[in-house]
Length: 502
Ligand SMILES: NC(=O)C1=CN([C@@H]2O[C@H](COP(=O)(O)OP(=O)(O)OC[C@H]3O[C@@H](n4cnc5c(N)ncnc54)[C@H](O)[C@@H]3O)[C@@H](O)[C@H]2O)[C@@H](O)CC1
Ligand SMILES: [K+]
Image (cartoon, rainbow, N blue to C red; front, side):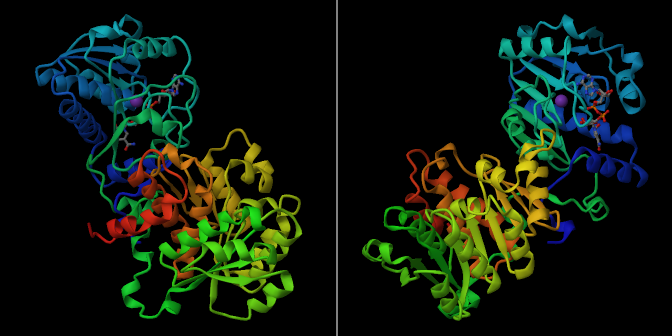
């Protein structure tokens, strides 16, 4: 993906956004113009979203976010609205562009605690944006609570105050905005929870920063949207034979836990793998045979049987973990697949099996050099990366990134804001999905979708990112009442959407 055509999916942390700002100003666009453009974008979005609003309260903070607030206040006054502006401090203490914006504000500036939130139709939150660097404390927090209690819709400038742009964490107190207007590109905090839940609708405004600043900044964090991996997606029309679309293998657990493997297998087939085989222990052959049709079944009784099966070089991508059971067989199978240098999705029990010896797994992954994706939820993640999981100051984004670097493979850290991270530092934050995805077997389907894409030679990061997106999108298409069995059958619709068909 070339950066000029990033499709808007790049996310900039506060430091990178500061860099975009500096590069733009160095290129000849004055900072005050950027601030004016930012304020205008917020004022316009507010009027579009709240056409009936007449009384606006602007809360202006001590930095450039506050400066944007003064511009919004001025422009809304010019548009004939009634604006009251409340400042955290003496406007004379503002610096630079914010001081200039405040100087051009034509109305009175009141103290922050003078606000009566119920007297406004809309509150503009210009307290803190990218520069938030500590928890919001009293007395500002009290004003925010009073505003929230009044139930007046909040329009946030750049970020809801109190939400960290870098991590999505709530620092102290945070607004829940109805609308957030950010500039140039979104920030990780717009997609990571709990920040995402505080943003309301997010509008990204063009304020005159040119896309080519991204060539210098080289962002490595992305919104997990189709633009990120569209080019890497398999195109079945160019491959005539089923073997060209890869052969995925899913390991089945024992008779009573074999459903998980079938879910993964069905998902791999629907995701486009040419062939899918379930490798089952003797005890689970009959139950699998009774349930499988398009999916093939093979007896696999132990690691030496697996070694023999791996002689078939066409077996391209493996899923190990769903319903598999813990312990030695899981470790032996994973290590055998890796030493045969095949693509591997390690999920659930396959991850937990290495809790006592994560370094053994990481060494095998590095030695294999084949595409490997780990798909832990929080609990499994903590078993494999206990120190990274326990680090209180790092975000989910940083945790997934550190884990991917340590493991030497792609890590999918699951949740409402699943993060997909690659060892080279790239990371994507997912936003598709619904709460109904928290259902038994949902993760098994995800591992199958990813394996289906790996079987078709999609690179690991793109396969994992696309798989997570597709899995979430399928859940959105179904809505309430979702069970895992519904997901594979929805993948054709998701694939059709991605191909632009209806
Ligand atoms: N970077 C850019 O390209 C642009 C930035 N703009 C605006 O500039 C903002 C960033 O401006 P700043 O870097 O000045 O940062 P902010 O205005 O977000 O906040 C920085 C100020 O808040 C104080 N502060 C931080 N956390 C606090 C807390 N918990 N309690 C009390 N005080 C706290 C800091 O000491 C500093 O004075 C963006 O969010 C955006 O709204 C826009 O004007 C347009 C262009
Ligand atoms: K804000």
